[in-house]
Every structure is written in structure tokens, then in C-alpha cells.
Amino acid sequence: MEIIEGIKTRRSVREFTGKVLDDETLLEIVKLGFWAPTAHNFQPQEFIIFKDPGTLEALARNLKYAKGLKTSGAGILVMADTKKQPEPGFYVADTSAAIQNILLGIHAGGYGGVWIGVYPVAEYIQVVRDLFNLPDRLVPVGLIALGEPVREKEAVDRYDSRRVHWEKI
Ligand SMILES: Cc1cc2nc3c(=O)[nH]c(=O)nc-3n(C[C@H](O)[C@H](O)[C@H](O)COP(=O)(O)O)c2cc1C
Image 1 (cartoon, helix red, strand yellow):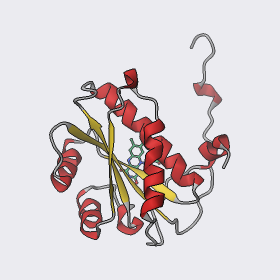
Image 2: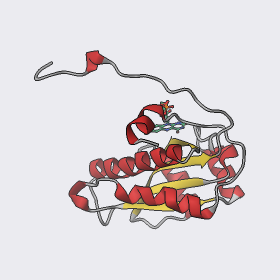
Image 3: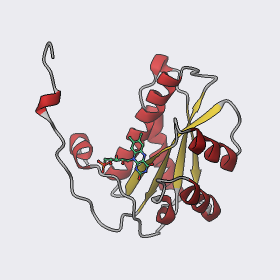
Image 4: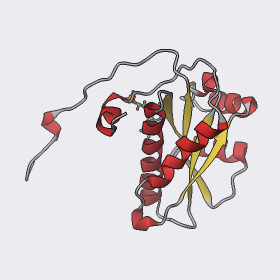
């Protein structure tokens, strides 16, 4: 898929067939997160790929907007290493860029995915921290549910010329 077409046609997918992506595919998708730009090139992003049904179920149950994980069969947790980048404004930007790379990779592969927000909601951060037993240095920023979409979602055109300014407001 051509990159600009991919950017313009990606949509969030929250319903999956239940067919679990194989490990090789999951790893190839996660690798894309390493090509993201990061502030000072500190590269604080770390990932957990998970397929355990208990983990998927616990996240879907405890996070209000994580229903995508009920049928995806797999998920990716994206975290920031605060030893590498202690500034939240930067590590959130860094990991968000990684998440977008991954979402585009999922779409380009013909699969579907959705970003499930964790940071900065203290309750969600605690749920994820406890479930994965994360060391203090790692802050969970976002989750991604990914799998085979039940149906294709239509692309939308959100361009709004009123929000693009040239030289001044
Ligand atoms: C920071 C962030 C957090 C998000 N959190 C959730 C979430 O918890 N659950 C969910 O289903 N979608 C979540 N989304 C996806 C948005 O709802 C989705 O991108 C938006 O509705 C636009 O739809 P689209 O992705 O299909 O273009 C999140 C997106 C971002 C950028």
C-alpha cells in the first residue's frame, strides 16, 4: 500500500473475527514502532505483545474503552522508558509516533487495529501496571488491539481548510 493512501484510509477497527495474527506478523508490525521519530533520538519506546486470553479479558473488563480487545485475540502494550526520557511531554509524543507507525503497518497489512488510550488516566495506568507487573521505569502510554477486521471501514475525509493557516491566524 502506498503510504499516503494508507494514511488517508486507516480507520479504527474494534470488531475482529477472532483469528489471531501469527507471531511473525505481530513482530513485524511491532518493529515499525522503532522507526518512529523520538525527541533527542532517545528512543524510549518498549512493547509487550500479548495473546493470553486472561490478559485480554482483564484489560477489556477493567478499561472502559477497551472493547476492541474482546475479539482481537492479540494486543500490543506501548510503554515509555522514563530512564531514557523522563519528560512526559516528550515520551508521550515519542510513543504516540510509534503507535501511529504501528497502526499504519496494521492497515497496510490488510488487518485492523485500534489505539486504546492509557496515559494520562491514573486509573488505567494502574490497571495496566498491575496486570503486566511493570517496573517503575516503564510508563504504559497506550494499547493496540489488532486482528482481522469483521468488516471493512469506509475512509473518511476530515480535511478542514478553516484549520490551516498561512503566515498568521
Ligand atoms: C490518544 C488516543 C486514545 C484513544 N483511545 C481509544 C480508546 O480507549 N478506545 C477506542 O476504542 N478508541 C480509542 N482511540 C481511537 C479514536 O477513538 C479514533 O481514532 C477516532 O474516533 C477517529 O476514528 P478513526 O481512527 O477511525 O479515524 C484513541 C485514539 C487516540 C489518538
